[in-house]
Image (cartoon, rainbow, N blue to C red; front, top):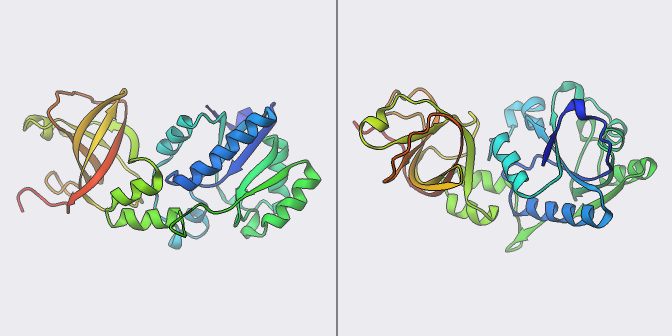
Length: 283
């Protein structure tokens, strides 16, 4: 998978593309990506996922912007596992937000060579969301791009949505989240050097810095850590570490029964079950 940069535009190869925030990468997203891969293979075009950083509402309506299910690193890692050809991350700023529906469709067609666009039934685009599916079909036809609409994916007659997953994460219900995601909930990050307290007392730890607006309920979880493809069982603390200083937000994984000394590099931390609220060991 190649992450497309501004310097790579315009693309030289025609693409079949989809666009969305893809926060959490749940089973509904997986359904869309499977359609993307099927169509791109059939038409012998490259598959392209277009996503945003930050979430558009973070810029336009920060007071109602949703918390994050995953960070950008995790999202890109999950897309790589799906064997997508290209990912283009739109740096969402006020200039981009001002693009009219016409300008936005032209951008997709001319810069990203999109010949088929796969979107959900309620997709909105362009300045203040003025463009809808019917607008896209008209503008796409004029520019040589076909619109493919995907109906919502449901479970027990309820749509699988990032909104529901966010609510469950805020409640610490990672087991229910796992079912909606179709995978164990995880966060990827770069290991941060800690203060070595865990190592001194015989419980080696791995620390990563999460997004400040992560949806996850603060507390202690059971789970595991993936380091260079090797799995280590772990007890995971997400929060401000009251035992240490109670000031800085961390995801801290305590490795169980293993000697590991990792001070840098990339890891993935998986959350299996909420155990208890976060508290100081001196409380």
